Length: 156
Length: 278
Ligand SMILES: Cc1cc2nc3c(=O)[nH]c(=O)nc-3n(C[C@H](O)[C@H](O)[C@H](O)COP(=O)(O)OP(=O)(O)OC[C@H]3O[C@@H](n4cnc5c(N)ncnc54)[C@H](O)[C@@H]3O)c2cc1C
Image (tube, rainbow over all chains, first blue to last red; front, side, top):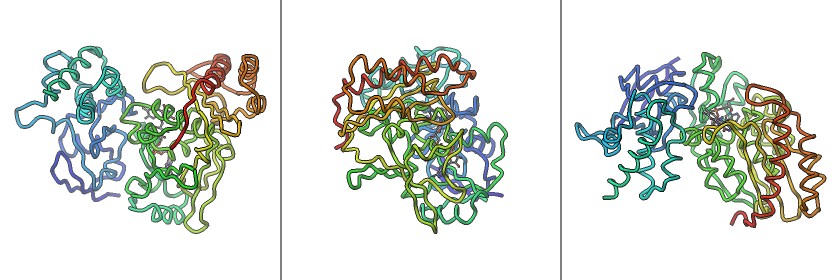
């Protein structure tokens, strides 16, 4: 059976008929071509699929697309404004926080939440903000540094 | 079919009419993991997340009433130490933003952190039916056997009630896992002391169900928590639990850790002079 989905994705209204058991991750990637969000563990452990659902970070792999009905979804594709990167994206580049890049979109969305919610994040905030994200390449030092730099810039 | 009612009353109607042929979904943090592993839902889906009255936290008659759809992220903010800390220990932020207390109780995993904290608080769960109305059960009577509960096929979990939180003096939580985040417990423990002197003690991952250590509790009633009593209680807890060997930990290790955690949570009750709930 199909579900008639109406929601907002990256500020644009979206209307589609979708299978009821389709995950939000597969909807974004396979139906809308928004392949920034990654599927890795598909069990909620790695955070590579993190998107914002009504401003809260969630695993899109564990959310049914139909559950986004009437709600607003924001993906990593919406961080940059045309060719101007979000400060957190720029900071990831500057610190070398991305290597293979698979975890990066999820980390950007998790880190962005912290910056949106906390004006002056402390060290423990930086750590807990990415508690639900795994990186197997760079380790976390450069990632934490990048989020800290972006936080400093948002204040400036 | 996929149903997404916008009130909880409408969800109850659907559940009563379809019984086992319809499966509730809330955060999906248990259910969709199975779906991604290739298990089909097999039945119609009842999405509870659009029900506006399903995420509330209310105070009534000195009790704290949580709607079933209260998320771990909401529970983290509560002024009840064991429940807030248990909630904060679940998954990462992405899981806590979605996972709900009703989902935790319905899944009834022996490792359910929310279930263990609520057991120690001597909480009650409300099981609701569209026509029969609601029934309140103490959590100690709700968990029956491994992933089996008193929840009927045609019912939904509507609320959880923490009796008279004003009567709660202190509560404590401790979880042992393999790492600091996104961490299923090897053993977890929660304890609560009420103003009338009663102490409740609960453990996770040491029995087929989240369990209350009622034998150990008996030792503690009305007694000052002296060093000797703490020692006795630790031994009693370790003897009372019925853990299994699995890939996470051995039964012997779990028994030994129950003694350690019993002591820690009880000591914490003593040192925390937190006054709970406004
Ligand atoms: C990465 C990860 C880490 C996790 N870590 C922990 C942890 O540390 N501790 C822990 O305890 N759990 C953990 N969990 C498990 C899970 O998050 C919790 O059990 C959570 O409470 C489930 O809630 P949900 O709303 O997501 O449930 P769902 O997946 O939506 O549903 C779970 C079950 O409950 C039923 N259900 C839901 N609502 C109702 C209702 N109102 N009435 C009747 N039945 C209902 C559903 O039909 C289903 O059978 C983790 C999960 C993941 C993916």
